[in-house]
Image (cartoon, rainbow, N blue to C red; front, side):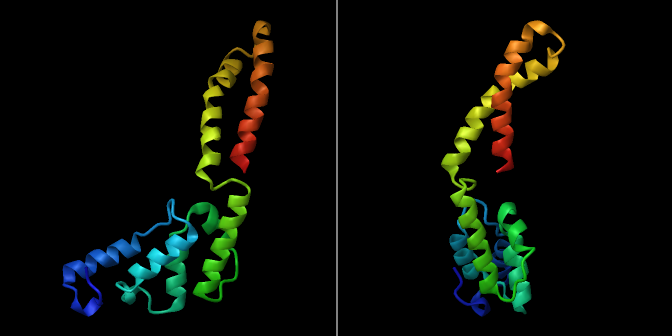
Length: 148
């Protein structure tokens, strides 16, 4: 591992720069992503000549639902970008949109997907109208969970 860019061989420098440029938040919290971002940023200083460049690369690596919120804000500093990202993460977490536990029931509810499909294929047959009405509330709750 290289501590200072000047002591790293060129191939190691390129690998570390590539890791930095390809860094994405994925399942990290904003705080974890910020920590890893700053650790890797020290090896990619040529891509971070201005604070604006640092902000752009940081925001680009955020998860979509957080990035979408941050990009429409006026960002005056790197710390402000991190603050907005944390705020959005907190809002999403409060609604259960980020917690892995909240995602599992949605997947389990998707087991009811065949019922709406049968309803679609058999919507012209009156004998299936009761089955269709039973499947409808599940479809509504499913679409609601996707909007969250």
